[in-house]
View 1: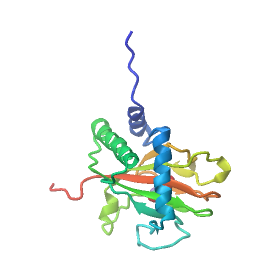
View 2: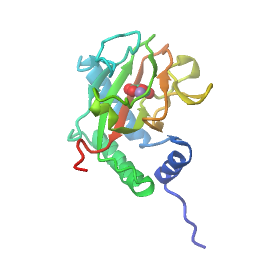
View 3: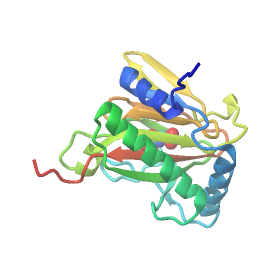
Length: 210
Ligand code: OGA
Ligand code: MN
């Protein structure tokens, strides 16, 4: 008898439709994840990453967010970076087909959270004319690059669901957390070990003619 098994990405998109967020493991193969982590660590060691600025006031304030970032180029020639962008493109198409999200572009940066750093509670989409760029963010995607992470290493992504409820999602290599950018306040809890991840946002078109 023929059985249909839903594609893992389709299950994630179903979860987003139902609850606004999804947690998916093994987003990329473990060999891809290991290679991706190595490439990103090289950026860090080569001093190619800069202290992150908070969006609203473009203010460098390490107590709000203590992470360091580098933007990823979609045309990067390294196969594992391409594997990431291919998987994200598949996800983009599914979001548009299943949820009619009409997301057109993706921006991604690699992030390092040094020991002791946090990213305080925030929204990824601001409803302010001063930051049109951030208004276009529709779906946030945090892909973790840390193998062998332990709960006591901290740096969980805390997703605030409703009044006084939240879930804490621990880093795990290959785990991606997807959530609606306009809807979910979230924060990164203090890290006791250095954490590395890729954060991406799907955006609607820059300008609308309508
Ligand atoms: C962000 C963010 C979370 C993470 O960059 O806006 O919330 O898991 N990052 O890195
Ligand atoms: Mn965020």
